[in-house]
Image (cartoon, rainbow, N blue to C red; front, side):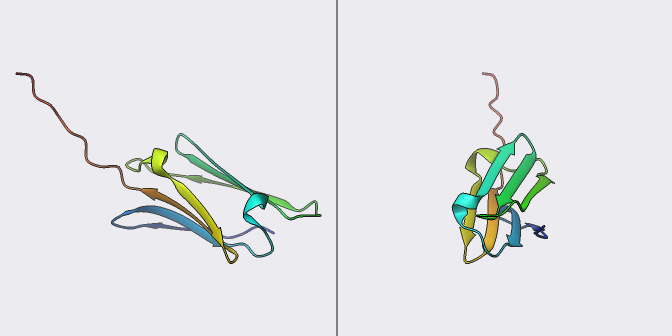
Length: 90
């Protein structure tokens, strides 16, 4: 069980997705440390496990990342970071 992840960048943000049948959301561990997205999945009652690491490019708001697992579809969505604001000295 080694899922193929698709990565897509849209106007709203960055998204990674994969079809992973046979799991529940509690069988997945998703972490984001810096620019590294790490996804670990383990099938219940089995020694089969996978680990997948994806590098997330800069310009995305990792603090607002969300992961979903619905009907065998895994998705991680990270919205674009709002443009920075520059305050001028007075």
